[in-house]
Length: 186
Image (tube, rainbow, N blue to C red; front, top):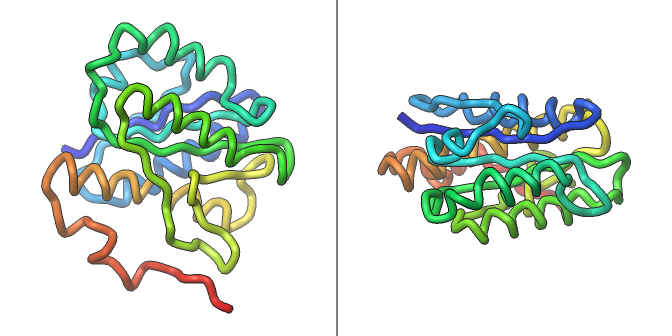
């Protein structure tokens, strides 16, 4: 069974909505079980359980939230070596475009890399001008179709990578699904 944890912090509910969309995308890969947990309810066992992790945080001055950082500093620090080699990605919402969401994703990825997670971005475009190089991002709630598609794409890609690398299901490799890839047009 492919096991995905979507771990998030959300103050306004916007990042929680993104998390639900990421989970929805992960659920499109057969044989995948998804746990959706806020940092307030998640435990170290949830992170140890998963093959792949999508971490989401509101953008806090261009970085991850203090609650998400505290989770990794306090809850996960004693589990340091138990998560090495798992696959992870990031997503973040901010108050407006230009609010630092991509930098917040990078700060999440930095924390995850320090724990030994193998992190990724997505080169596929979900619309003519939207891709997920650092993770899925939103300004406020993910209302528009493109932002929702980005969140779903991130979750799907996480489940694809864990299916391939943790479970040897080569048929789930994104390169075998090239007809689903969308490239920018000039």
